[in-house]
Amino acid sequence: MTWIDLGNPSPKLETDRYTPYEWDNSKKCIILDDPNAFIPIPFTEVMFKRKSQRYFKTTSIEHLSYLLWLTNRVKDQVDSTMGFPLTLRPVPSAGAIHPIHILLNSPNMDTWWRYDPFSHSLKSITKEHVFFHTVRESCQDILNCNTASIMLLVAEPQKTLSKYSDGASLVWRDAGVLLGNLALAATYLDINFCPLGALFPKKINDGKQLVTVGMSVIDAINIECN
Ligand SMILES: Cc1cc2nc3c(=O)[nH]c(=O)nc-3n(C[C@H](O)[C@H](O)[C@H](O)COP(=O)(O)O)c2cc1C
Image (cartoon, rainbow, N blue to C red; front, side, top):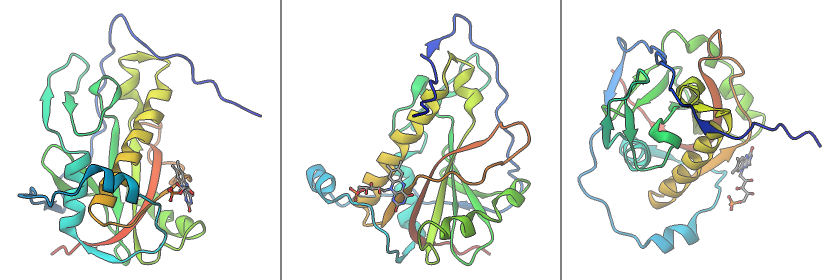
């Protein structure tokens, strides 16, 4: 067995400064509506019902909005000396750093979208787009996702590493926490959801500032964009 020891994370005595990855925000943007009411369903019912689903229907963008709002939106933020704010979201993250971005592509749409958890909106991926061309094809080899949306968890590990020595495992654990909570929230919202173990694309930008740390296939989100 090859077990890669990622070390024992510990907070640095002095944190490093990190300049977050700059996405191009000038292109298409879809503002998602804040949910105004939720149908109460017992937590236990959601826990009992959660199951990986491998058949996918089409669902509305409101469902995606609710899924992202329930798991990833920024509820509160505080300044830090690390070069980016710490954020409080529904799901925990080591050091409140939240190094993971959620990206999504719907079937028959070329565009990849990034969730902006500060403004609860979707922003189209532009300059990185070329790296995502083959993701859908690669997923198709694992699971029939012709009629599904694909979700990627893309991390900026250096955010976490600016606070922690040997912090790589924290990024992976953040990805697991997020994936698990997405699966539960998807169950609550009646969105079919299946985690994937594969990690695509292999490369997003030169220098590995962005790396894929998780994937899932979910109901096809009907994204209409003018
Ligand atoms: C990290 C992770 C990776 C997974 N990768 C795949 C995958 O590549 N293909 C797949 O069909 N299911 C995948 N699954 C789903 C598991 O197969 C599933 O959780 C397991 O069979 C238990 O079934 P349940 O989720 O319905 O309880 C993955 C689950 C996790 C947590």
